[in-house]
Length: 143
Image (cartoon, rainbow, N blue to C red; front, top):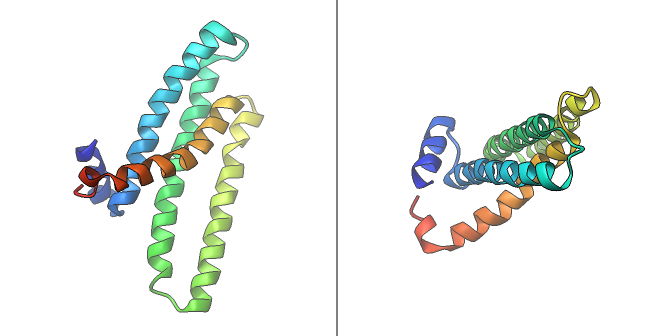
């Protein structure tokens, strides 16, 4: 994972923390895909597995994109004056919320599962906690 985080950081020009967070999102995608598949197959067969996977993929890609957008917005707003930075940060937050609403459009038209999409969107918060925990560990500080 150390190599993946470094490659993400250098290719996207994002910080090590954001790169590690994107890596954690990818790992959580795989874990939730496996757990969700087991639940759909054995416990709740009313959900379509491909719809769940499509929703989860869309939600995780959205979470990945939101991490990159937030990283770029913070970097750019640090170089601005106070009033302009507040306006820019507010606009970027509005764009991120708008993207979240747009991500639910495929679920409305039956192209993605709602449960997978919700899980993928919530992965961002879980990844933030896991990344914070990993960065407190000394071996992750030397990415």
